[in-house]
Image 1 (cartoon, rainbow, N blue to C red):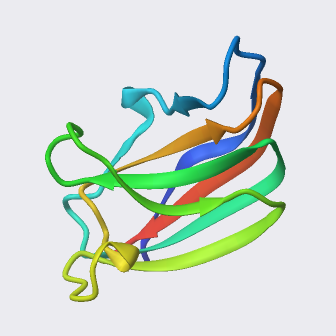
Image 2: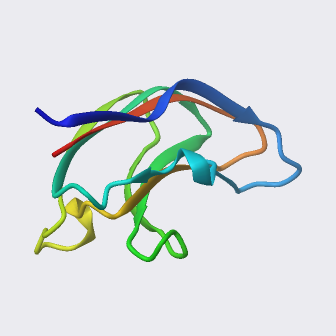
Amino acid sequence: MGKIVELQPPTTVSGTPASAPVTYYQETDGSIDTSRYNSGVLLIRVQDALNCTVYVEGSDDGGQNFTEIYGLSTRGDRTYYLNRLEPFGAANRLYKILRWRIVATTTDWTATFRVVIVLK
């Protein structure tokens, strides 16, 4: 059995910035360090995404540079299998650090979502 980690418990985030697009990042202390694990199953659940996309991204350099792994801009669930030694590129790679990011496409946006990963 793996370790279940909520990258983001169910939450709603919204904004009305002066200009768009705007990018909203998860706080650094909320990111996950996966360096002790070799694989994982990632679940992204979007309840509502109005004028935005919810992404999960990863970093292998201590959080200096992040690579977009997956994004979801409509209501639904997506499950992804990640592996530390994935030979097929970023699409299935388990990065050392994971976090979420929201990109809003207009000035009024809202996202209700949850991100969970089971690590092995």
